[in-house]
Amino acid sequence: MSGHSKWSTIKHKKAAIDAKKGVAFTKLAREITIAAREGGSGDPAMNFRLRLTMDKARAANMPADNVDRAIKKGLGTGNDGVTYEEIIYEGYGPGGAAIMLKVLTDNRNRSASEIRAAFSRGGGNLGESGSVAWIFESKAIITLEEIGEEEAEEIALAAIDAGADDFKVEGGTLEITGEPASLQPMTQIVRDLGKEAAQATVSMVPKTQQVLDTSTAGQTLRLLDRIEELDDVQQVYTNADFTEEALEKYGNE
Image (cartoon, rainbow, N blue to C red; front, top):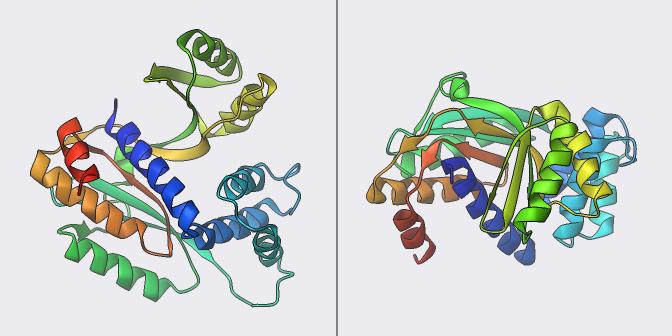
């Protein structure tokens, strides 16, 4: 399994825990606000990005009132006057692994300060714009869980007809990838087949992997965790390749 998939798995499990704690609500609200603003509509039937984000909000049991307020804010009909902007930050982990962050913030200076401090304390370095972006490529990713190999292949082949580039099945999990523009048709195909994706998103996938030893992997995982805990950080991407031993040790800490 690729380093991207391992980190995605960690994030997916962590997101489920955070959702139970209510930690995810603030980040989801910001994502809904941006989706409504950029899509120009508060109707999920007319705004695909908003539809996917609202699906995530429902999965996290986010109150409907919170969703409604976030949509109104994005459409400019809210009353708090807060405006968010998307910023990409780039840097390196302790072992030289590339790290990219997607941030939604209403205060650029605060975000930069917090992110710089997180990198410094975690043994990493915040880089200049473009320093690691070349290592990643934008891809649509759809993940289905607890699925048999025969059924997974049927869904994957249908997704390929809808624009998917590749797929893999491992441990009862199907991961389908394609160009960003294929996300909507691939998602629709999955739903037409009566399935719900555990994940449907556009992600930054590394072209190459940075192999880390167990000690450095642990440091990197702790840094990534520290970064993800920042309120303004929405997504974290890395090309770190974690061994099973490192993941097991990290999971037991």
